[in-house]
Image (cartoon, rainbow, N blue to C red; front, side, top):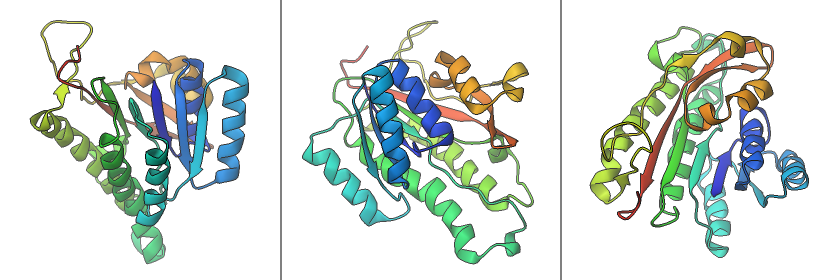
Length: 245
């Protein structure tokens, strides 16, 4: 299993990299902080014996993404899973922030996610199921004063992921058959209900560790970032080639 994780140098991205490492997945990690990426890489390889490649990349800059893609192509890398974790938020009144700081939220959360998702879908491993995970927020469900741009950017991800699930099968990518329940090729892109309770009171690493299968199966978790809680709503689309079961 080859997994690409964006925003992997810290926070949720690093926690997901550790969880994937425990499962024996080979990883390609990207973030803007190369030194932090190297530390994560060393820890993963030492603890789990997995292959962990890293490259710094600014998803808001097309030329930086092109450099990342060149590494993929030079090494003929193909992926089974994409975890779109990279994101940005500023809290405060719209006019209290510099114009470009506000625009950067959309540049990373939306345009950056589009760039890497498009690129990795073109570099998925043929004939095998593919999983794309988008990290949104309960903020996507409500316009939010003081977080107006952030909430709107997360609404974009919700609508994009939902539409993509309908579009890709028409381009020869069939939905992967669920391994349980009734029916054949049932849709596997869905918003999932939150699980709360203890997860609301625990650190990020605890939630991801205890969530395990639930998180990678794309359930909603309440995650602590620093000293505050952030509700993250995740969506997934799993696709395979025509011969995938």
